[in-house]
Amino acid sequence: METIVKGMDGIEEAATIIQRGGLVAFPTETVYGLGGNALDPDASRKIYAAKGRPSDNPLIVHVSCIEEVEPLVSAFPKEARLLMETFWPGPLTIILPKAEIVPHETTGGLDTVALRCPENRLTLRFIKASGVPIAGPSANTSGKPSPTEAEHVLHDLSGKIDMILDDGPVGIGVESTIIDLSGDTPTLLRPGAVTLEELSETLGREVVVDPAIIAGGVSEGVHPKAPGMKYRHYAPNAKMALVTTKLLKDKDYVVTEEERRIADEKVAACIRTMVEEDIAKGLRVGVICCAETVARYQAKVHGSDVDIRVIGSRQKPLSMTHELFRILREFDMDGVDQIYAESYSDRGVGFALMNRMRKAAGMTELLAD
Ligand code: AMP
Ligand code: MG
Image (cartoon, rainbow, N blue to C red; front, side, top):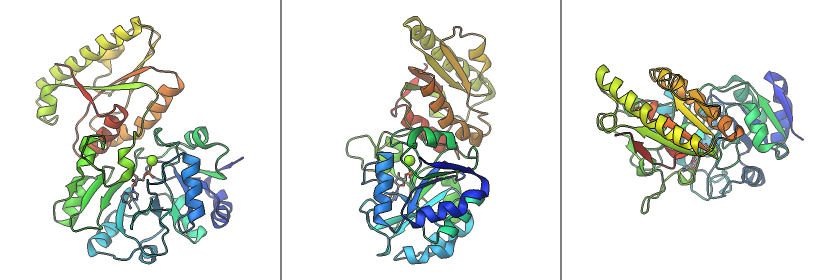
């Protein structure tokens, strides 16, 4: 049975577990990770087994400072160092060619390695104390929404790991941004809280978006460079439908106040109709809306079988990423059959939010008009 320790008290024990080849779930600013010694092939195998994760889906290697990167890579381009200096510790994972000592078990058979220095006091101390880099995918059962609280880790992995370091709910709530710097063209493999705009501004050149992000990695002929992006991810048990309008999509959500008001009402009316039809069929329904639109649902949808959740304010996409996975998990716990959610802008952090919401919705979006 795993122990759960709050605060700094568990760090020494956690480090000992890692050195003995065991698994420790740890907090980060994005989601909880499931850690093992990244240089130990057996520890990596254990991580895949605990998560039920396909072994071709590589793990992210966590370090506590930039100096710890050097021995893990066979090339260390200036641009990688620049991004590390700018964004670390923080929600950015950088792919570089791997050094020999990083086993293929950790990199899913690839000759590259994903590196990240998370911004969490406890975890930085834990990595340092372990004395080895920590391989850490998200600490959820493969295919489920990533864990944003220690409680979620326990729900998915109880009995399969040795310890959970608990630092309360995470801040950001969606996984790190991944940029590939192992080739000539910097490529975004997964959107996160470090935005595409910030990356290209820092590098002073264009960062290409891996087509698999847009296609969701599920279309024929599109092969995602981050193997993890091809799996059905972040998925609740319920079916989920995302709803938007033609105009919002065409204008990437940059519309006048009047256009916005009309679009909000179209989306809400469409969702209300579908909710009522589902309730009549005896289904349990969840609605995800924002602070700006909640009144369009609350007063107008009735019944005990509908659960209306405010994901945050659309003025603050980070308030929304913070809530998404928790809401999806709670819908699952409540036995919700069908979720309807509003779509939001892809700008800035919105790109990460919408990427996770689209994945949960099987990459389809409905038009309300
Ligand atoms: P997770 O641990 O759930 O955050 O998933 C890690 C993500 O990083 C997955 O989508 C992996 O496919 C991706 N990843 C890890 N290492 C590499 C790599 N060397 N090249 C490309 N993607 C990687
Ligand atoms: Mg994951």
